[in-house]
Structure formats: C-alpha cells, structure tokens
Length: 202
Image 1 (cartoon, rainbow, N blue to C red):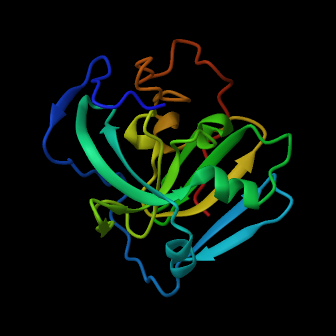
Image 2 (tube, rainbow, N blue to C red; image 1 turned 60 degrees about the vertical axis):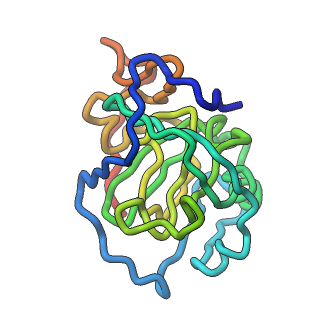
C-alpha cells in the first residue's frame, strides 16, 4: 500500500502542482478521443472518454511525487483501476512491461507488476473535477509509488510488451522503474535492464 502522509527520501512537500509538458500540451477533441489497449493481449480494447467515465471505480486520496524533488500531499484522485482495464484485455503470460503512449508523442514505461498494483489507476478526475488540460485531460495513469514522469499525461495508448524499451525520459537517463521509496531517479552506470531503441510516437 502507498505510505500515505510519509515523505519519500529526497522529497519536499509543496502546496500546488508544478506542470511540465516536455513535448507541449496537445489539443484534445474529446469526442474523437479513444484509449487503446494493445500488444501482448488476447483482446485489444478501445474506450471512448464516456466509456471510461462510466467505468470509474476508484475514489481515493494519495500523494504525488515528482522526480525533481517535490511532492503534493493528500490529492484526491478518481478513476479506474489499471488492473481492471488490463485484465479485460486478457494479457499474455509473456507480457512483462507496459508502455503508455500520449497524444503529444510522449511515452513512458513501467513494469506490468506496478501497473497491476492495487493502487495503480487510470485517473480521470482530481479533487472532484475532470483533469485540466495541464493535468493531462482526458486521462492519465497514476501509480502513487512511482515518480510522476511515469504517469503519462494525455494518455491514448497502453501497450503490453515482453521486453523493456526506453520511453522519453528513460532514453535520457531516467530510471527504468522509478520507485519513490527506493529513490530510483536515474539509471545506474550499466542500467538495470538492457537498453533498447527509443520508442517512436505512433
């Protein structure tokens, strides 16, 4: 479980979010938006924004931790368990990693085991309101025990793969997993996993 109200090593609490957009903030046409789940799954799935709103099954308070060293405590999140979405697609036993694709071309990668954690969600709302554009509207994964760069904003694709591949920040030296409690901010000299080619936007 998330260690609520505890500050991970190297973090400091702040009151308000600092917003980043490495590749710019995309324009979102919500009526055309689709979230696709693909890769090593038996049944590829696709959801509209309205579909996702009807599936919301999580309403909890968790802390958000940025790899740059700040944390926002006691944030209310509402959304859908990532494990539910992934299980509906019937993942292959060969699936080990999850790649998140964003509408702006950004990508991040997490171990499947972290995506399936009971606290991992697809967030649709914060503090009782739909995500703002800066917060990642219409949807973003949120995995409380991993640093925030893993929770890709404006997510439009979730792909299950068998081998590790760098995402946007991982290609630039950020850690493969990114545990806040283990301070996994950057890769070691050799890296924990084999480096692969960077993911290309699709």
